Length: 206
Image (tube, rainbow, N blue to C red; front, top):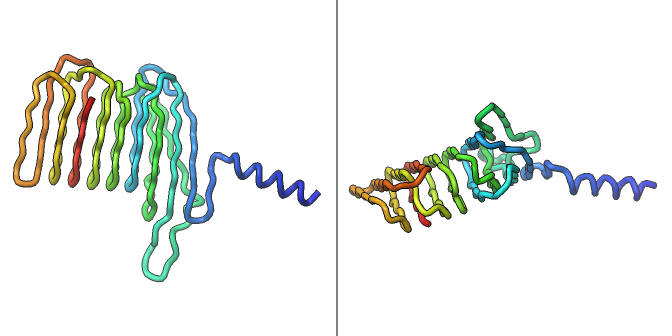
């Protein structure tokens, strides 16, 4: 009986949506993102990969790792860290606003949703973008791959770094100063991209 109870406990732990061992934790969520609803994501440090999908299902997977909290201290315990969700008529907002931890997000987003992402330090990678995007990183990088043939407007800006747009036939303008870079595009599409990095590079390509 004791062995059976232990086995059941292990099985329950293996399928939990929040798996953690002190300084590490995995959070998974599945939500419905309806037509007309957009997605907003905000967290301080880490990386995010966005993949657009042909459904109304918003799938979220986050790997969290605690960092050193100072001299002679162990990594932060992240077992109590939770994903904050706010659902409004036209927007779903996701946030983990916590210090001394790193976050790695993989999010599958319905292709009909516009996306707004803000990160303090880290990277944003977007695959198969089919809608509008606003992205901001303090220190890090932004890379966007799209399947759309054109956009109405693309604006990229870095304080220190490079910006580039490739694969479109509209009007392209680039400005390069000593360390900063700006690239603007104007086309005949329906959607737009605005991306800004304080220190780092931005690439948008078809």
